[in-house]
Length: 137
Image (cartoon, rainbow, N blue to C red; front, top):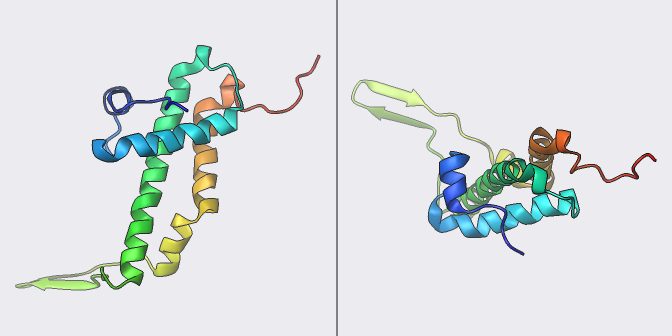
């Protein structure tokens, strides 16, 4: 399967700034698969930019999930620790960190799929590409 988007579209047209170029191809392919599975062979020719924008948004969700999974794994393995406070001279601050259960929640497939569904509806609802029922005749 080919990706609906390339890095040039993502960075120049969609103006995405989250996904680094070296990570882009893998995430874009996964995002394209999610979009394609949801529109189930709908004719995208009239809505190609909408499909591309939806795919870019889904790619960012998937990339953020990857980052959160990596952070969670590093914390669980003891490679990364939470900084709860810091003090430099007279300046000090307390830092609120996500809990492990927060990270487990935002990395769960259910949470991510819910976010993806919202984005697909935001970009594609009016196109009719998401409709999977029987058309009225």
